[in-house]
Length: 325
Image 1 (spheres, rainbow, N blue to C red):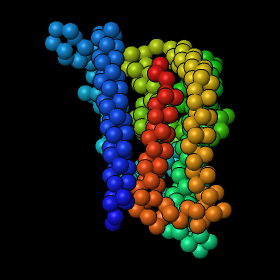
Image 2: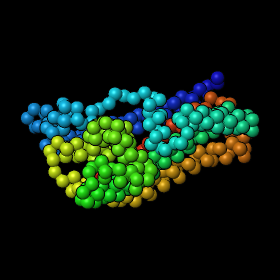
Image 3: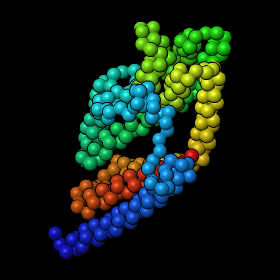
Image 4: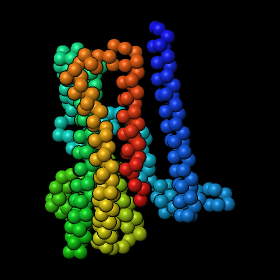
């Protein structure tokens, strides 16, 4: 290794270390500001006592947790359990094992075809990684779409249940009507509640179990409200109407947030997609021009720095597009 090449490597490592140090300083400053803002909000809400600094808890929620009636924090699920949950949330018709084997097969085929065409191992690995990323992105988008549909259906279901209760039907009958009238993905949830209740399981426990397995914040709110209503008594029809109004208000706020952050999300996709697209286009059009990045040490360092920069840029754009409300 000659002196000039060594100097170039030292300069690149120094520049990378400087940029990384600046990024770490910015992250620590943002974290400190976030913690100070969080502490200020807790003080304004009265969740932290100024004299002792001890956090106060909600008495009703604590009493329910002691009796085992509230949502206790479950144990950390295994990787396979998380994959099965993703499959349920995404609405996969095939088993999780079949989907994963299909994804691995497609990625391996893309790796083989790309390697035979371009004779570049890094390019073939990049194509396989892009296929996996595209699949993960599609799955997340499908999960978000189903969650949005779930909340819209829950508003309609609460309206149907409220009218059924006012007409004189019992709560189980109202849930049965929702299971018959509302389609997927919400209809199967209420059908499961009715089926478990018909098999002898307590209705409150059945609602709790479904809310935990579904892992939807709105459904957990509904289950908690119903459990409190069973304990304290009251008008279930009015409760469901109030919950429906709360869910509609949240949906309006979420739509407004998506409109406000739409430009940032679109800019993020363009800024991240352009370098990746140009990289693959140049590899297919002029592989000799890109061969320097694979055969030299400096080229490999540059590729690693570019990949890290794209990841950091994606993280920063995601943080910019988050609105706290």
